[in-house]
Image (cartoon, rainbow, N blue to C red):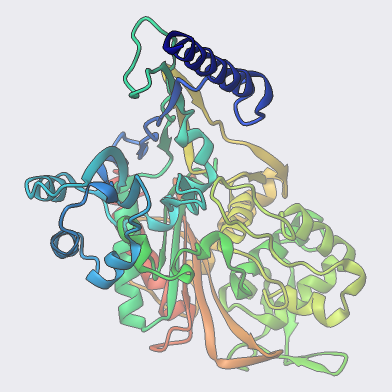
Length: 551
């Protein structure tokens, strides 16, 4: 009888096991098509590094660690909270609220450096562990903050690039993750004769920029000095090769520290050079002058009678200082920055051709620069423009552009008429393969002859302008100042301006073009007294750096 009962017990036991296996393998949707003993681990690739044009590192990866807890293994929760709070700079209350005793594994804080990791590890706290990871390291701190952007986390906790180059080239820099699939026993130990599948990660691409760290330092240091001296609320400097529009330096203030981006609000991340429009003022005048000369509606030797203000419908346009010289040349219009003279030039060009050239200069769209966050300039449809709109656009009011758009258009006027796509990445290195980014012509604005004429006129504009600057001796420099009033609720505030200067040198064969812009400078509202002196300080240092001899 006992033997029969024992036999029956084993029969039922085997039936239960077979039934359970049948349920798991053939019935349960939860387990269909899966292997309960396979464990897949993600292999995170290294993010690509970023270097300047000379190979100097601007962004690298640094050893880092993620601290995690295994709450069920914690023996003294209060002691653990106290010691972690001190070493991680996390308030005890926040840490206590975060720990969930029901979890097996819980990530607490990433980006921990090696020193902090070793200090905590030496405390031998039960339930505390570390996972190796990397974090972005910016050796030059905020030198190129708006250019580079930063790496933060997405909603899933994965690294992702935001703003600037980190955002625009995120997929190239991030690489492709791999995975390791291993077959394990009931205790979770690898079965070495079982399934072993490895797909290696592909590390991210390295980027080599057009940016020159030394030129970037020159640009930012002079921008900072001017910000303090002229008490401006913000400012930007862009340095580029006018023949290719390869950006050599780009700095805007205020900026942020990409190593500590989490300490700044989002307004600091916006790159004014590509993400903020403004009315350019008189730096726009050479574009209209070049269009009129190119269309042979005027010639450089023409004159006009600047006898007084000009009436456009119910509006009156006058010169910036309300003084008039009578008969003046086209070059003199630029030299004294005559709004009245520019209205005359615009009238000779005509509304249809003016609008055609605004489009040729690329306004109303983006430049295509490889930085995240670029916005298009604002250009009304031609059907919405009135005579007063055309009149004010001749001197840069009533049209909104970004700094990168205006310097690109200006460069086309002096480089032979080629409208170039601005760019900041010169080479992308995929493993052993290198892709070189070549300069891209997006269109043509004026003829080479018109361009040569404009260079000469802009040299005279610097040499015979209303303000005599302290300029580098022995060099031919061309350029134009701008002072644009800021519209507030539809009305221009004469006390608030955007002061700017665009200049290039050596003027006969330009090596560089520089734009300096200050928003709301309080020491002086005029671009000639704020942005222009900073330009000449930058130019003086660039002549030395590029070893350009006096002409």
